[in-house]
Amino acid sequence: MNRRRIGIMGGTLDPVHDGHLHMARYALDALQLDVVLMLPSGNPPHKPDIIPAVHRWRMLSLACTGVPGLEMCREEIDRQGVIFTVDTLASLREKYPRAEFFYLIGADTLMELKKWREYGRVLRLTKFAVCPRSTRYTLEELDAERDRLTLLGGDIRYLDMPAIDVSSTAVREAIASGKPAPHLSPLVQEYAEIYGLYGAVPRIPEAAAWLDRVHDDLTVKRFAHALGVAATARRLALLHGLDADRAEAAGLLHDCVKCWPLERMQRVARENALTDDEAILASGAMLHSVVGEYVARTVYGVTDPAILSAIRWHTTGTPGMTRLDMAVWLADAIEPTREDYPGLAELRSLAEVSLEKAIEKSLDSTLRYVRQKGLSVHPATADTLAWLRTLPACQP
Image (cartoon, rainbow, N blue to C red; front, side, top):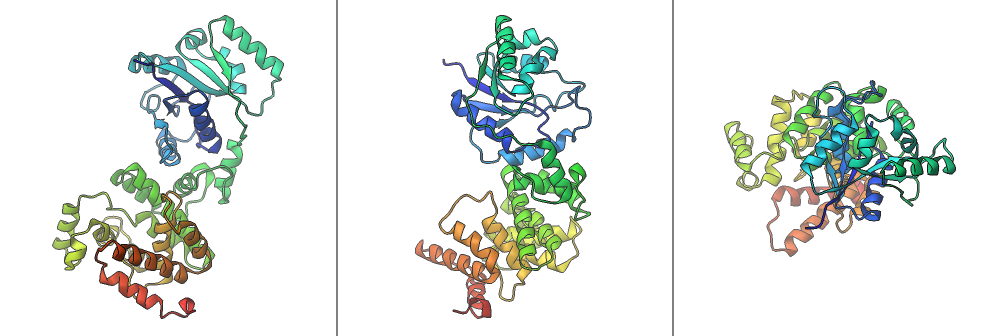
């Protein structure tokens, strides 16, 4: 049996950014690794002021969603007390006794390895791959330290990768100012801003509590989608002069029951007389918007009819839907984690110019596809498209 080759991306990841992901993806190929464990530190002795682990873990899961070869690892954040790398590596060695480990570090960390607890033992537990980053050390100093550690039994190699130097401080400052952060996933920025992390001012007072519940009720992939829709709905609202906070709130909650079993949705719908449409009751893809509006109102405490309307109509649409409804509907279709489909790039561009034309084009494509497959179209969708075509914005 071949030994597994496992990379380890450790550190506070506070927050995880494109520099971390670039390093992990490059090492995956260059070192022919089977997987890279993304390993956020729990309570490092040298960094007492980091963001709580629960938030760093969630942000990391958002950034890694859909990235092949990256695997989340809770080895450090689930342990109590001060965490040392030597203990982590010993534990991983027990879990993967036949594995070959490659710990990914930057150039500065190479010079700091001698300060790690039991660093001689650390050198026996893992190999090290050094990724180029801006450093205060010269190449001669780095080579000398590598040679010294090699004589002690270490296996240390340089990765010949293009450097992406990202300042974590600059990322955090951008989040605090509400500006797009350089080299940061929009999902991570959305999460940080909703919670008011890194000095950001929360826009929606209830959103942090909402997000905890949404996180618990959805899969990781669906949670990432919800953050993507919230961020995209906000951006579209700002572009088109709509209420951005309402759009963001509706986007965050639009799929709040999406992962419920169909039977549970049906039971709630029937017990509360939410719809008698048998086609909707039979389809979780449509029913989740109906039940989602009800849950947003009764569980999340949403009273704003504009937010509730956007949640209710984000699947089928409806004649007379508001422009805020349209922004959330389109955000659901074009948010950044959406897998590519024919016309997606064009739809994203059109949504920035005209909500009406974009939703008309999307509904038209959907109806053509469904009919080509010989499937039935819900009347609400066809009626919505017909109504859109009467609007001045959609006239030729």
